[in-house]
Amino acid sequence: MKNIKILFCVFIFLTLNGCNSQSVPDFDNENAYNYLKKQCEFGPRVPGSTGHQQCKDYLIQTLQRHADNVTPQIFMFSFGEPVRTVSATNIIAAFQPEKSERILLCAHWDTRPWADRDPNPKNIIKPVLGANDGASGVAVLLEMARLFHIQKPNVGVDIVLFDAEDAGNYGNDRSWAKGSEAFAREFRSTYFPRFGILIDMIGDAELAIYKEQFSVKYAAPVVDLVWNKAAQLGITEFIPTIKFSVFDDHIPLLENGIPCIDLIDFDYPYWHTIEDTPDKCSASSLGKVGRVLTHIIYEQK
Ligand SMILES: [Zn+2]
Image (cartoon, rainbow, N blue to C red; front, side, top):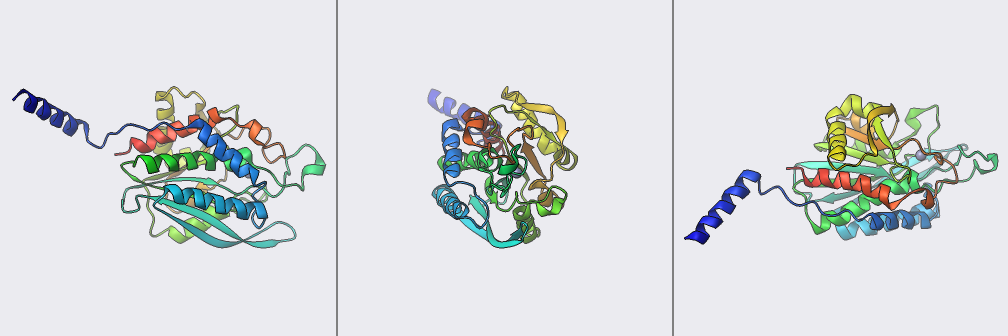
């Protein structure tokens, strides 16, 4: 009789607290950093290049190990002077595709064709390696994909790696974020996630992430969710003030009704230079962002 009472109490406890609540798996910082280095080993991932093709195959194969399905979205992309037209690919990895409640996590995987912010004029025609600007966001999402496979969250998740983000012209917003634009156009009437979080340039060893203006203006509750969680976890690199407004991959999503925010550390001295290399990034920084996002996903009901 005593045992039955205990079982009954456990049942009541679980009912009140929700059987949905589950532990949050550990985000492995070193794993994430290895994913960053691995992408950089292919060299720059400029659309149309060998490194781009090889990295695409690697990303698809890695995600196929963890996701329920991986779908490439192929589109034509024109950039540069003289204009080059090449095939570009968004990589869409779905976890628990049967669930209607979904969260979008995204990052761009291509790298800039020109290091045109490099202080040395000889370098401006060289491509960017993109350890932080490209590989860092992808690295965090690959590690999260591994966790989603080991322990299923309560909600469905889509990891989307955008191509063709970083070959734009500084004066022309619409020349950037072409992969996200293609994704938003194709899925505008069929895909309605609860919210989206874009991560870009979050691997800087000197991490400081300020709130981004468009994110606050158009998706304030998602910004609050992230900064509150960071504060709760004691991760002080999320600074609760607005600093930049960035035309990034979240803009075409916001324009098509997906409340998506951009987590970006735009104070990066190696931005669009040939010095954007893995030694400027750290496992610890990837881990701080990864830990906040992992908590947010696993705490969704
Ligand atoms: Zn860039």
